[in-house]
Image 1 (cartoon, rainbow, N blue to C red):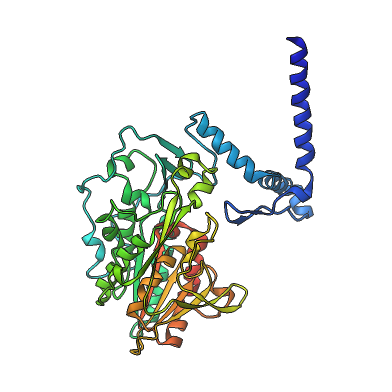
Image 2 (tube, rainbow, N blue to C red; image 1 turned 180 degrees about the horizontal axis):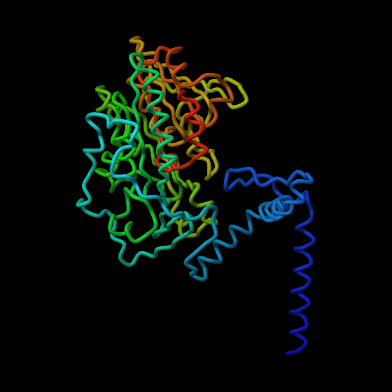
Length: 437
């Protein structure tokens, strides 16, 4: 057996040297991750300050690890190997963070809005939707995989939630007497699909209570939309993707009906829209979990609903280029990770939709992040003009904030749509706050 041992040692060191050699071939190092949809870490800029405080070498370490040659294939192989051997954990981006205590009272500076929609939220005595007995459960840092479905953890951060509250209230104060401000906070799938008894055993904040806190802290005049109850009452339907963090268009539709009820308009029936389906979708949860085989075994289907009045949208890109596109696109030829871009052309700073069949001047501004994309098409039957603002990028193409835009276009309604995860993100809320002055 000794000759074979020598061959094994030789093969080991040969592989070690080959990988070491490849790792320093700069042309092989990727700059963008297609699966994670992000720019990878750049080689740090040199300065004497960063050299002496050690941050320059820390930056090199991060760059070296984040841009390793063939990283996409290696991450995919890692996920498949872990699934093959039955490992219960995987390496992903982010980690579960302990949420802060959610206050029982509204934010002290603001009065609770009368007729708060949170009072209609479902009680914890509702039947539990999923039977988890015998279903393999896999905790993946910031994700939880139960069977073939992934769920995002939520941790409440009061200071960031208060920034959100203050931003909405500031916009409402500025537009008092000009336009009505509506606020919709969308729960993540974990609170809608997983039983409360199960959620209490894991490190995740109570989304229903967090939404109640934010809604009760809104100033008088802000009208809140109870998307939580609308989704909870249909929790056995296909409201969220299994492999992606977004809701489906069906989830968006039920929340549109909730908004219509608060707004006092008649919602269009789902049958009034043209349905299309695009199977094979593998979204953000799939990529963040290292392409987990349990998720790829049952890909999602993206269902779209095109309004009858128009399928036209004018988009302004982050580079300032304006072009006409389809409001709801045919995603047949989109790759498996990009099918959600079928809605309003994806995430763009500023977009405009005109309904040629209405002449009443009805105008709504939708201020959103990506969850709003599947929601916007449902508003077309109810408004002559819809202006879509993605607050993450709007500053790249237009100056001024949402109140200024509302006055410019003569909007009667301003609707803020945010998934609850965005309301704990400090950088996102800083962008929103800047546009609400």
